[in-house]
Amino acid sequence: MRSKVFVSLIAIMFNFAASAVVASVTGFNPVAVFGAGFLLSCLPLVPAGAMGMAVQKEIWMNSIVEGLFADNSFLSKAFNADEFVNTGKTVHIPNAGAGSSVTKNRSSYPATVISRNDSDLTFNLDEFTTDPIKIPYADQVELSYNKRESVIKLDKAKLIESVSNDMLFNWSPAAAYTIRTTGAAVLAHTSSATGNRKAFTQTDVEEAMSNFNDADIPQEDRYMLVDARMYSQLLKSLTAADALAFHNLVDIKNGILGKLLTFNIMMRSKSGLYTTAVAPKLWTAAGSATDNAAAIAWHENSVCRALGQTEMFESSKNPLYYSDIYSFLVRAGGRPMRAGVEGLLAIVQDTAA
Image 1 (cartoon, one colour):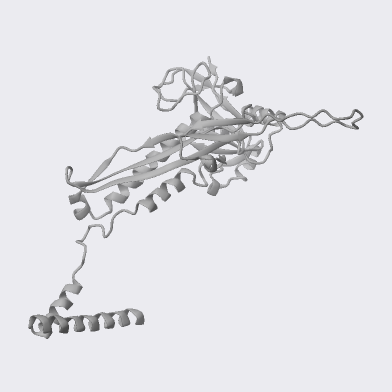
Image 2 (cartoon, helix red, strand yellow):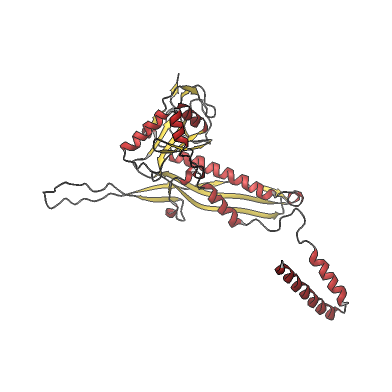
């Protein structure tokens, strides 16, 4: 309070001094000049309902990045390959070859010298852009809420959804690295799919665990992403005791709904999507009657994601549209981390009678 009073007194003294200077130059009455200056200082600089400053590009770009790889997002549970992103479009990740063999009680010398054959895994960064959207000047001045902020938040959410769906396709392994669901018949639930599919059950999670164990995948940091329908099917397959143990390990902050048979279970509206030939399919492709939903299981170091350039484009007070125009661009990509796809598995719906 005292600081505000002090600042106000300084402002009044400055106004008084400035008024004296103006009066001496113009010959106007100094009291009248002081009064006019005081009244002008009380007027608001920005009309009611209008924004006081331009949108801060850096703030919004940082907000997009944080939303993409938020702690409660499945994308955060992967190897971060940002350090391998250069100015080009392709990301290169060095992949170590097989380790040396071990001999017990070696008796033959000299030992045979071998070379380790390292490989270079690559993937391209895809470019995701939002459609430009205009905010009419009248909306900025007349609306009681900040329409620009509201529009940008919605665009950011759509951008995050698109990147996430595309990353699931990039991570989805080929048919050789899939197993099929084994439960009772349920209705197909992906867009345009018809007929029955076998439900996703605890037995399928157990098979995935055995697959990971056989490949010596560490038990810590195993994750499994399912869609809402498959999650419901899984819960119905659990006994009361299993369900209690599952929910006791919930970690909402990190997006974990529970832990089952070494896997941290996560859920979103979409997970994997496969064709009837058990090939990964993009969610943006036209739906088919024979499409199958899939759960994706992985170890944190078995898949990677990378974020490249992030940009926000703006055209303030555009003379052609009498509006402000905004759009966003993000470059992102990912792939399985290992040439042998160890620690990555898809559990694809099987067809049921």
